[in-house]
Structures are given as structure tokens and as C-alpha cells.
Length: 349
Image (tube, rainbow, N blue to C red; front, top):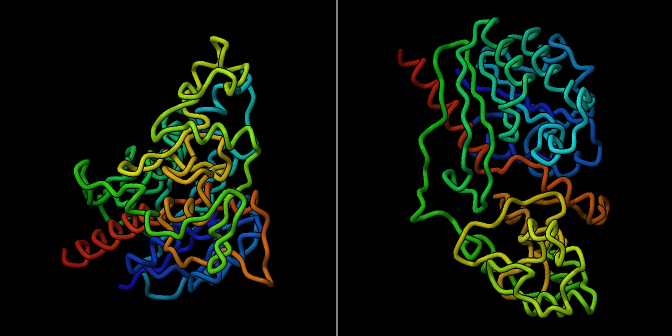
């Protein structure tokens, strides 16, 4: 039978696009953020439903799934509550309201009983009780469950990024396909963005409005000119260093104000990757932070993915959040290929 999927917490469609590239038919994406609608629907043959997942019930999904299909439910609940940074500063006994969304995901699974489930999130979630609660819901309702920490370059994402990937099926045991790439042929920053036109800080490529970079102050321009690939602020003259960097506490943040390296995968793309001071997000050669388009490509979005147009403008901060929060497309493709292989093997069995 053909596969049909619904993508919870779909955002602008990174996971949906990856699943589609693997041959999985994604019917709809559900997200509370209306600003994601344009990019999601402009690039995917799926309907965007603006809803709070906590208010979605299993019966709401029944009419969306086509008949006689293998029903798949996937999603990446907002990961901020589970990040290493958030857990470091979380007060004892405090729980973020976004934690509840993973419980909502589990509830929807219990109510709708899809054939296959996939969940992707930050690795730190593995150490939270809420994750084992989620796994418990799956096992109690008859799912075979597999999960692991995945290194994204293994699956064609040109970025040092690790993610927790869970696959579960009521049809039989399921796991992620073996790595496609290896350290000797990982895709690099050069492979991903080396062909893009050169632009200066604060400029926009006239042929691609997403290939735009943030302006730099005179001080930051002096800093980036002294930055080397893979280096840190320690490469600067003393008069360019921040006061906090001269303190012992500041010495633990070596990656800020750094440049990427051409021949390695990029650092993890965050929601503020377009800012030179927010990480090692300086272009390897050009004196600027990477552009929005470059960040999207390093997240493995196709280079023609549409994020805005004249009728649907967006602010840089909003676009950065959308891109940085997305599931890398090629990781989504690997998840989709794993599901397709699983369904094929079950059918032959």
C-alpha cells in the first residue's frame, strides 16, 4: 500500500520536504505559527493547517488520511525546553509549557494509532523523563520502537549537527537506514555554498533576495578581517577583544565571532546564524556573516526553496528562526527512506 503522512509541528517544511523526496506522500502539516504557511505550501504538495497541536485529537486526523494507505505520523516538538542551554539554566522543579507538546504528540498517537511514527529532537531529550514517557506510550500501544543519536553529516547534511531520531511501527521492527556518507566524503561548506555569488556585508544578491547578509559595524568589520577559518576571537589584536573574553569566564566561549571552514561541515545552524557574533557563522573568506540562503542550504534545503515573495515578506529574525528550527531536509529524506524500506519489507513478508 502507498504511504501517507501528516507532519506535526511542521514549521516551514524541512521534514515534509525530506519525506517527499523519499517518495512518502505528505498530506498535511500542522503548526501553530501562521507565518510558516507560505513557505510550507509554496514548496510542498501538502496543506498547512494552522492549529495548536495540544488541541488536535485523533479523530481530527481520520478524514485527512486517504483510505487504503499506510498512515504515518511524524513530528519534531519545539526543542528549546530540552536543549543543553535550557537545561543548564532551568530552575529546579520548573517545567516549560512546551514540554506538554510532546505529551500531546503521545496522546494523539494513542487516539489515532497510525501505522508508523517518527519523532526528531535534540539529543538532550534522551535524558529527560518525558522522553521515556513518550516511548512508554508507544510500547504500551503495540509499537516496535527504535531510537538513536544521529550525526547529520552521515546522511548528507553539511553541518556538525546531532539529533535524536525515533522510529516506531505497529507493523514490525523498524530502524534508520545505515549512514550514506562517511568522514572521508562528508559534504562540506565548500560543497554546499561555495558556488554562490559573492556579496558584501549588508548586501543582497539581486537575483536571490534570500542571499542577503547582515551589515557589520566598523568594529566588527575589523574583527572579521582578523578572523581565520576555524579560528576564534583569540586571533584578534587585544584592542578588538571584548572585555568578557579577557575574563576567565569568557574563555569558555571560543566559537563566537569565528569563521566557518571551507573543507569541513559547518557548525550547527541556530536560529541566529545570520549574526557574525552569534557563533562561528562568519563566511570562510568573505568579510561577513553567512546569508539566509547559505544557512538554508547548510540545513540542506534545496537552493530554490522559496521562503518569501513580494506578497509574503518576512523579517530577517523570523526567517532565521524558521530556518534554524527546521528539521534538516536530508535527515528527513533518510527518515522517509527508512519508512519506505520498512513498508517494502513488510509487504514482501
